Image 1: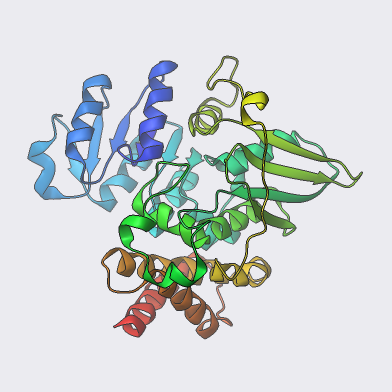
Image 2: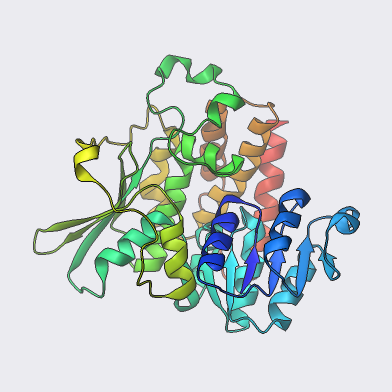
Length: 359
């Protein structure tokens, strides 16, 4: 397989599963964490390593190292592997997803932005999502034909219990302190604003072919998904907090041995469910509009990437992230997208507009 983003959280867990099941790694792609990459190279023997910067090539302990986005696309096209694990964060992950599908390769997709911005132009038959919520939905559906609607769960993020009147003053450090999951900076901020859950609803819309998708907060992250059926029954998917289970299924399709310890219901004792409150998560006001308008995914993602980066650089406040995104959505609400080329052009336009509004 090819692993894009090997030093991130999903990449690290992918390699744990690969080692456990003796799966071959043909290409490892990483960013700037060369120290961790070199540790990974001690355990695996990929034919090719690709990193972000030419300046870091000499630091990588491997005889065949390339750099840059074009090298990634070339590797996907020229490799023998029929599986690409796309664990990139952000719009950066779209081009590799498209290239892999063009080359008839299966994509284990953790890069949710691919479907968020271009779901209408992607052949989803090549996609297996690496996401606890979508894995849970897939596990529950199991080819049942009487589905009525889907519900995924949210942890509530770093500020789920924070006083509302103090949200305007929270720091970057506080926002990055997720109560349940260990993730990268971008997705942790998206979890705190609830933008990540909007992304996941858009993913579910494309993966399962329905706009009847919603989300609720389950603070313990023990239940990942519900499926409501037309007969009035509802099923829930329980699993302990780890990405290794969905990763294992995405890599192998079938798993016959224990990946996680089973959930001990007696230790859980109680579960709590909360509505996602737009007062705490202003971005949630966009939910219905986003699900109804396939063209808005790229606007949502591009504006959000710019706003989150500006927050991480301490140029804007936490609450301004959602405000800026909503403002951009309003500006570009009637945008028309006809093909995949439009996606890339609109992405650039949205970024320029969002950044100019901040500055």
